[in-house]
Image 1 (cartoon, one colour):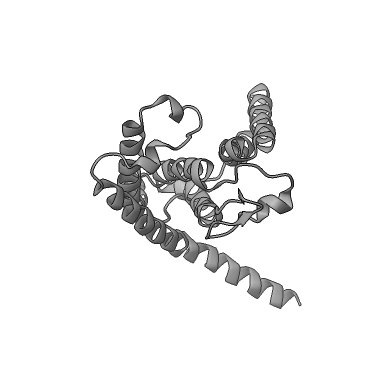
Image 2: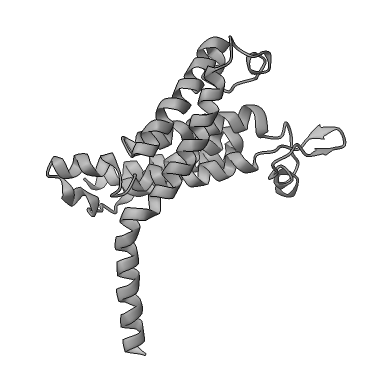
Length: 223
């Protein structure tokens, strides 16, 4: 049994090592392609479409003119997608697209109202789900994109990326495997999904953001 466990541990160790090279690559290329295609499609439109201008964007984006929001989402999708595929500033690019996707879900794909989690889950769909004349949402693809972006936000672009090449060239290769597990790391782990949930399910988002703030304060007090 001990030999079997040891063999399993050796295998998983090598899989983790291989994962540093290959695991993020598929996410980067697939998400990059999808967002680049969406951004180029928007760039080819003359002016701001009426459907976009009439959207009810959440704070602080509702303070901006429709043309500014259109330009921001267009160029964020294009530039962040290219950066993602190259693995350049991967975390920043992934987080930018995380914000874009969250706002898209809130303004377009999230149900106008829901009375239970079961009813909300009806919106986990690609097509519009109508019941009793009410829009139940179609946030399935957006939610999948958020889940795919999270590993890139937290783990970066992997070794097959320009980020890794820059780290190596700067003689900072030790950062690839360095891990600092403390309450500040927990705070960041709570902060990113909290920022999305505060728009989608405000109570859950507020709880996560408060927990993130508490973890950061405790870590600061600990020194």
